[in-house]
Image 1 (tube, rainbow, N blue to C red):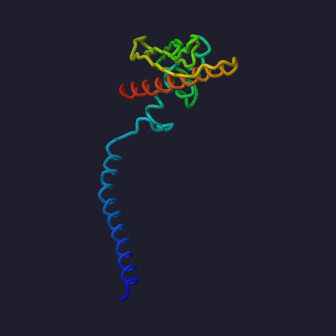
Image 2 (cartoon, one colour; image 1 turned 60 degrees about the horizontal axis):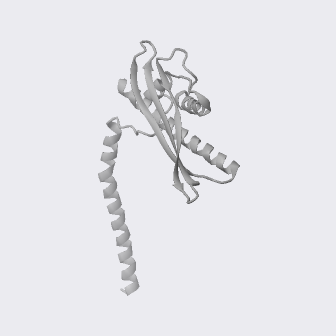
Image 3 (cartoon, one colour; image 1 turned 135 degrees about the vertical axis):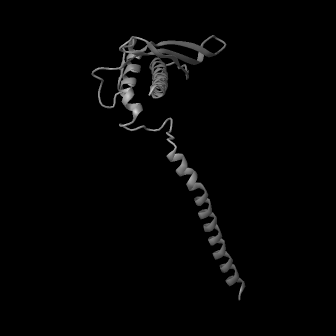
Length: 187
């Protein structure tokens, strides 16, 4: 037997050993995966689908008007997230939200001009039972967005607008997640 025959024989046994270890690992992991699937585990941030309990409950929430242009943008984002099949005819809940924003200068140059700023957007909200008027849940969603302060007028306006859009998107995601979780606890 030559050394090349011995090398080929060992490499074949090595591949079989790796294959056996892979099958053994799969045999050990498969029961754990199946047990997790059978226990009612649901991913927190996954897509719940159109027929899930969370989606059905979110569709029963009337979203109240929010002042100002950015408030309207927030309301539109919430409507997109809450209503998969259109707005409710007789909502069981009402979501009341307000929106405030402030800008803080972070980085100042020697001549007192800012090069960096932070936008703080605050949105207190309440989930209210539509029949009784009782507050079921109240919380506060807040977003901190930093951005560069530009010297050009159009660039500066576009940067600030983008910061507001990012903050409102974060807040709409947080409100949707927390209201959905609260409605899921009620069931």
